[in-house]
Length: 273
Image (tube, rainbow, N blue to C red; front, side, top):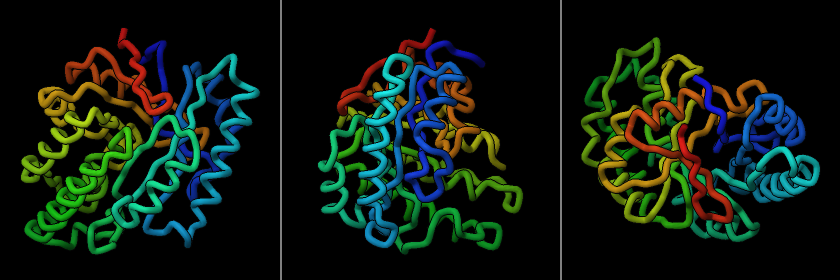
């Protein structure tokens, strides 16, 4: 599907550990693809803050955003963002890095279980159903705890475990048994005026679907949620802006008439035409 007003709310440059292309290359691609703009949300994982030199990476990312704006200001909206991973692992450093620059969008995500293992590293096909349930419950309880932290704008990748539990090597596994906890997370987001992210990256993977599923977007809206962002989760020019139309359509299917991005930490609505 194609929408004229397409904004990518989740993009990584080469300032992120897995990022491939420079800010300038991303901007050129965004112009070529007819995007309104995009948010540069380079990673800052609090569990590896010093090890991966994230303070330096973030400073470089911010500098590159300003440089890109000076070149593309007439053709693109380029937002200064950050994706803070595992913020509860070091709240002090999370708050400090967010205060270090005038960010437009702060994404928060959790990519590990409370025991420290990465969601993507577990061999779920070798686990029993009860073992997987315990992993899912621990993940969402941790995410609920994180949702009480207020220094972010967008909850990114609410249903991240689905990308790895449901794969070619493991049978379909529903996370609906965690719906009570997920509902509490979404209610907290709605109460605090936070946005929920629709991420299209899993559409290009083995799962072959946009996350979160539409039922959680509807749940969020029914709980009073107002703001939804749409992002590709891109780490390269090739996937910048990928499948945004399908993501926007999913937002509309859930009953929202707009999606948004954040500028100076305030939501800016984009009407879905």
